[in-house]
Amino acid sequence: MQADWYFDFISPFAWLQLRKVLALRERIAVRPVPILFAAVLDQHGQLGPAEIPGKRGFTYRFVQWQAARQGVPLRFPPAHPFNPLQALRLCIAAGTTWPAVERIFEYIWQHGQPADSIASLGEAAAALGIADPETALGAESVKQQLRDNTAQALAAGVFGVPTLRLDQELFWGDDATGMALDYLADPHCFERGEYARIAALPQAVQRRRG
Image (cartoon, rainbow, N blue to C red; front, side, top):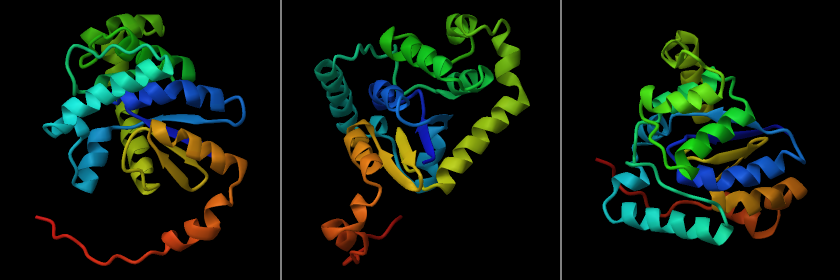
């Protein structure tokens, strides 16, 4: 079974799901795929949760509450939302390895460090063995890989982060982890009963856009 984990360091929900995905790797191979969440939102004509007044405050409280319940250390960076572009490029420049993914997530979401510039990521880059982050993150091959990752995610139907892809099925968000595990145990579970009926449910109305 092909398994991909699409994520952006801007998402605290990805930080919450990270440990579960790492545990899943004991059962199947999972490929980490850093993508630019902003490009996904633009493609679908959406705002991010942190861009909607009211929802922003609730989302932050909800994430902090979930972290406490799950026993996951969580400290927000100095500002959010922030531009995650350099953090994503750092991950790719470091080979998009799981240790690199963990290190950068910990830097941002466990230690609450800023990650919106090459300078602010200097400590994380050094820990990953990148002595000249400006050159490494500015490489065209790194930039292109991020664009390719994001295009691949959109082609697969990804509409949010984090998203766990198991074969052709997408499971969006930390709270869908259990659902993904059920699918892993029985890949035909959504082909039966009410799951089969709602898969072909017609739309009774569509709202106008714009």
